[in-house]
Length: 367
Image (cartoon, rainbow, N blue to C red; front, side):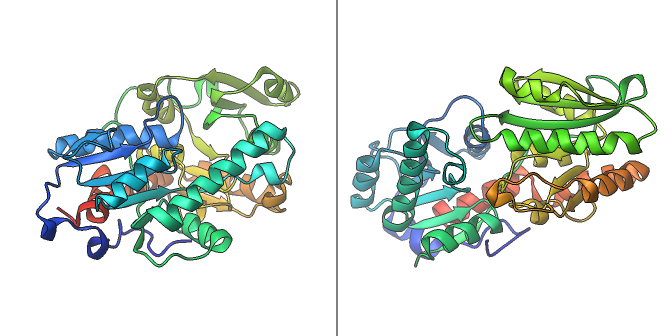
């Protein structure tokens, strides 16, 4: 779904550089302002921090006369502000991941359907009419957008999400040594489960249920994230599996939780570029995933394994776990090798400098 994999991005300089216009390139406007859980909020935090370290200022005020470029993190309802920025000659770069799709497969109410479809339309309008260039989070993401909404005649590139490789590292404190009380610890990290995303939890529970009989030790499934009580009830009957509902935790605690597990299960269906899987690899935690979304392009070079889904995820059919169980057993039998490869993959492809270089090349022509 994109053009590049491990490279950061092809330059958008011809469309976006302001050097020849004599404008200051030190202030970048970000839109929208984001708070709470989720990948877009995490991206904003990393970008602002990384740009500040390079002496580049950011603002949420698109009307600030010092602004020289605009980055739209997904979409916004403030199309009027984007139109004004475009009339001022400012380059507008849109960062795109995936799109809302579950509402077309499962009825979750009229309000949810209309909100999801409206958000897709906003993203598509910005992509087609307002953005001077597009950065996709993965090849999968680009191919998805081009299949549904067609190609656009403007510069495009792929820049993977990134992680602070010092904060997310195999070295550091752990919640406990992996496998407390002799258990194998399987970790799942999601911001929110429910609202159409419950199949991710069902697949995790099904995978754990299938894996447990093949292990010589008890299996502990740790679930980090917001899980409604009704979904937790689905885990009541899992022979040989202990489910540990950790809940929502501060971002700073994720590295030590990652370091305390044996395996990471990337549960989201058709994930464009999940931060949680990248963070796990950076901590030396091997990743297991079904082959949906961007997982096959992210989890490479021995950083884990990606297995066939075994049914149709686009129709929200449950996964068939047998191939993933075999992959998990192989990783556990060669755990140290996979740990080292996971960290090496993160260092090669998911460092903050790579991501910042890609976005600066797109926004300011590499300045």
